[in-house]
Length: 191
Image (cartoon, rainbow, N blue to C red; front, side):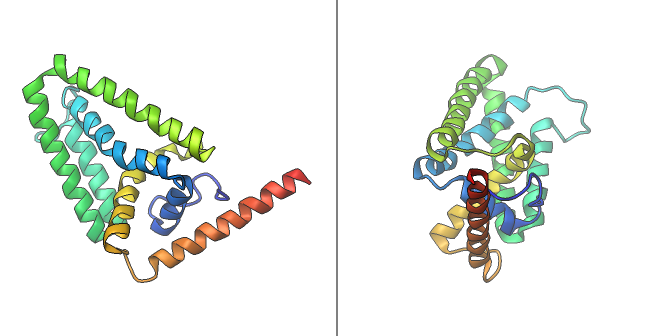
């Protein structure tokens, strides 16, 4: 919205969540992200099981990625971050077991259509329903934080979870402020 690229700060959870909610207002786009982000991440972990990188045991590329995500999520919120970390480690273990069962010859046949379908819907959701998406400079933040923000939104809607009291009110204020700034910016461009 009105935020400058990377001005939110990866660890600024209020600003990240406000940006996330502003980018996923349409129910179809929001549903596509909720339903497809998990399979996209899981199939990335699955294909990474076959990537031969020289990492010290017991690390493999999928575990390294899972631990990086887990560490980032624990840094922004201990309770929801711990749940997200457990989910990532469970996904890593499941992807490892599935990779051993399928082998590369079958695994890529699961990964490719899942990735194509999932990313097509992610892009279409933003283009058709939101009429905007994150800028290219924001993609690293989006790739890192979006899975956690989806989990946070689910926890908030189902259990009224907040990382701390007043979190949701602060996020709503940030969204309103960004919307006002965006409207002013657009009006100044028209005049």
